[in-house]
Length: 107
Image (cartoon, rainbow, N blue to C red; front, top):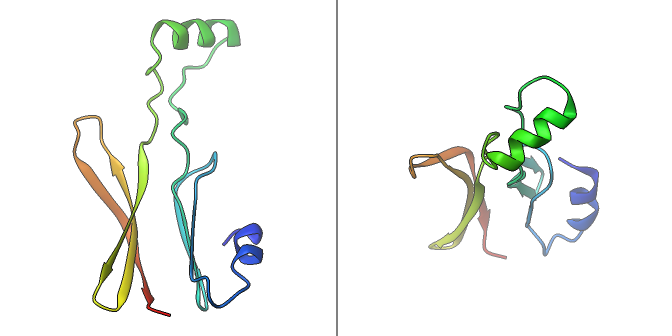
């Protein structure tokens, strides 16, 4: 779990932090602390090798040459528990759910 998330979640009244950063999606748990990071919607990887001028030219011509991961967080109550999980929308529109699912009891 990220140090920043640990500092934000010092209070036991806050059980879940959802953030998005310029890295890959992740789920963290430490004691009562729960952390979901949706990652980035910016293109990650998939760029061809070569001079930066050529890479930038290709991205300007084809903005989706390096597809963004399109990850998101779903949060819902089920009875007395909060369920949170990460999902990703594929290019064909399908949703893929990433593990694990986080459960938080009502405070």
